[in-house]
Length: 399
Ligand SMILES: Cc1cc2nc3c(=O)[nH]c(=O)nc-3n(C[C@H](O)[C@H](O)[C@H](O)COP(=O)(O)OP(=O)(O)OC[C@H]3O[C@@H](n4cnc5c(N)ncnc54)[C@H](O)[C@@H]3O)c2cc1C
Image 1 (tube, rainbow, N blue to C red):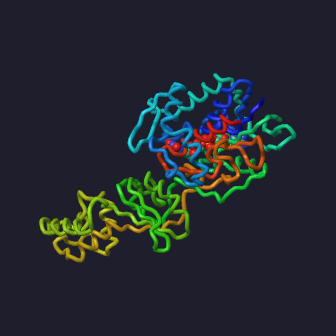
Image 2: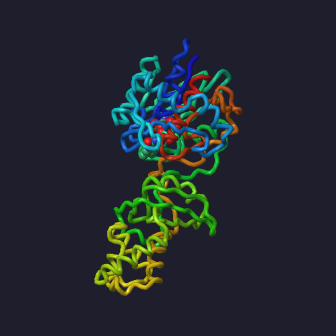
Image 3: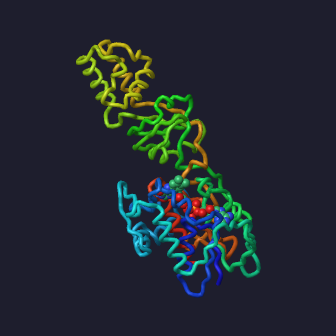
């Protein structure tokens, strides 16, 4: 039996390896880029956060009924054991994130590549699948290097995110042509643009913050973690995590609490004590030692207080306003840095059109899909690659 896998990324490599383990199967892995696993090699800032020990369906967006069977079959422990059996040592870090012990994403690509070749997968790079048709006995593929026929076909072409690393629309289009439908696609795990250029003065500053997202006055999401200010808006792990919610509606607002370990009363008390001890200091030093100096100055300016004014002139009302200013920095979201900058795609091919246990199409028998092309995306922290492994294994097992 011949099995063609379109896409040599995370899910395609895993599906091909598993499919080739069973005797009597010829597996052909077709990758349009010059090498397999190009995006994989860039994940986790070159370290590849390959799974997370806290894998659970709640960490994913999409239909839980669809996601759960694959996660039950391949949980975090199962993924780690599988990688160790392929020769990759793993290390668990903060928040349960799992990385290769080598700290190199390339090690993950290497072990998958070696395993694929070792199991007899025929890997064809520089080969783009341009079209796929159902034939009487299987599939006819038109590729950039010629025609290919296969009994079964796994589409593992990834999503629209990370275009420079191979992301694109190809997988959605191939599946649509085979009868499937796609939901709206949006960038997720992405930097956010905010209105007014207010963050420009803070460019490069990193801070711990509580982020609350509001839409039409209603709080829709929250997250505590690191925020990085940029000239266009905000970035950093906590922003990535809430970006999906922040982009879910137009006109959302992020409210940053930049002194989230203290109450407003505690902060205004600290400021008043400081004003009493050091009356000759200026307002621009009001938050010295409490906030990054540039954030401190911004908080003062937002209250309309003169940065050069004397701390000794601070009233109780000024202290309360300063504390509120540091704890409620409002930024209006105007958009994101787009699919090029995004780590993952929210939305994808409708999952009710696939069997969650086998990843086989309910519309086109013999057709399978795995990875980001499906309408499943996870939180930041190794959840997206875990979905690629789990769905790739399910498809490779059952094909
Ligand atoms: C910069 C960055 C960092 C990330 N870091 C992490 C992280 O640390 N942890 C985590 O869990 N997730 C991370 N992600 C997300 C994760 O990489 C993806 O969710 C995951 O790679 C999806 O796997 P996939 O197999 O569906 O797609 P991909 O890994 O993107 O693979 C798809 C492959 O198909 C190929 N292809 C596409 N169309 C065709 C075609 N028509 N014919 C032939 N080949 C085709 C592409 O070239 C590509 O190689 C990151 C993403 C980015 C962009």
